[in-house]
Image 1 (tube, one colour):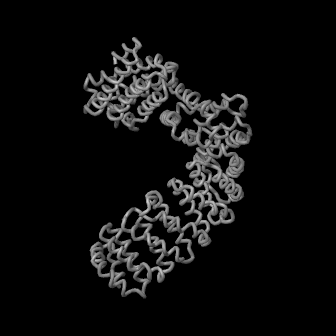
Image 2 (cartoon, one colour; image 1 turned 135 degrees about the horizontal axis):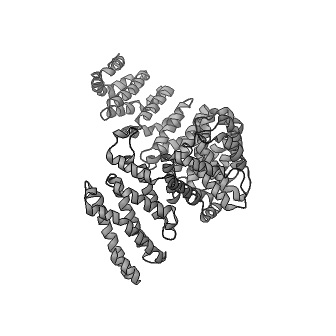
Image 3 (cartoon, helix red, strand yellow; image 1 turned 180 degrees about the vertical axis):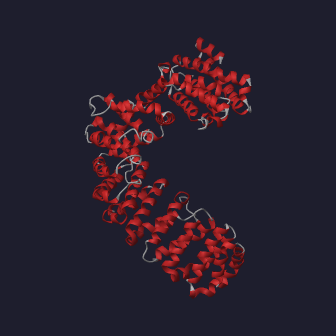
Length: 600
């Protein structure tokens, strides 16, 4: 490392790169040795000396980064070295929390100064900021540093670490961290706003894979949860300063309000007793949803998300019609609805009432279906289908007048999603709720429905790995809502024998499907499948648990009792093979009564 610093001063890129490579290699070895090589590393002076020295080295390397531009060949290696130093600290904290206690104070001082003060300006980069935030988060959340409610039951090591934490996280420090997180790290950048304007679907998807944003939000949640009594008044004060409408020409004010709303949504559970959300919704949020201006879009999007965060926390049922009315307007703005679908599901919570929703059902369902056709991203289509499924599930049979367009579109979407099995899983879930909503009328879907079930439950087809569970559920629901067994529905039972051979966690659903066929059309079904089915039962009995054996024999009993025409065939082919297993069940007292009934 000293050689590297000397070479940086001399300006020799080749020498700098060579020394950085050696530094990286040495640091990788020291990382493994420090983290995994000692049972009680805090008792080894060399280990603790190395760890304490990391902070000085990090400062030196960060200062070097001022003179090494982003286009320099050494820049990548330099950043990797800095990140590796932080990984040593993170790994050591994870594996040896009590040995890390002497490092808590310095770790917090270092991380907070570089992330939340002007010290870090011009030298930090995104991955380094993320690592520092992770270090703060791990110290704040570490259970080894949290004393019991009764302090006397806590170990001295825990109490010492807790004392260091409490001494560091003073009111001014916590206030500054909170304000800096909200007013700096939560702000949308110009690049993000441009990306949203050009590709709202892509921006929505990108937010889920961004390192920076989730990390800052997670740190905020953890610190707010740990120190909510201190930070709640700070956040409430920030809310109070933003009451009323915001000038659409002041983009910075709009972004600040967006960031504060983000914080209020993340801290919803902590703010339950401090915020009258119902009044805030009526007086502040609802009017902001009605502001039609291009620059207000980010804020409207945040308000949608905020309502989604609070709706399951504190939201009066009487206000839902107002929310549904607002949603009907928002669904006509594709830029906003993408975010609404990702974050807010007002039909998928405990307080939902069908009677309040029905006046808006036709409008919402029509707009959601139009959106399903318009969006192009696979993830977005999955979200739209999820919302549609929730709507269908909630209103049940009352969806029937409005599903014609969806029924016609799903075969096309299924064909288009041939390479996207997760989207097909979403289609299967939608079909499950659709069949339940249509009831006996679902037989009109059979030309599309049965081939879908056939493919999803065929273990010889590669997609079954993704589709099998939902495919079996759809198969069962189809039988439950079928007035009779059609030849096509009977034909797909050919998939059952290989499914029984799998003996997987889906076996219970398979038994329900078998029983469904027996109850619907025992004679026709057993004429075709009785012998093969009972042979599968006997093979299955050898491989499954006692509880599974009972399920098999219950299905066998139903088969036996409903197949009077084929009793001789059944006895000759399988009954003798099952007697041994039935007798083995007999020795377990819980099943004696059942076995007696079978033989009687």
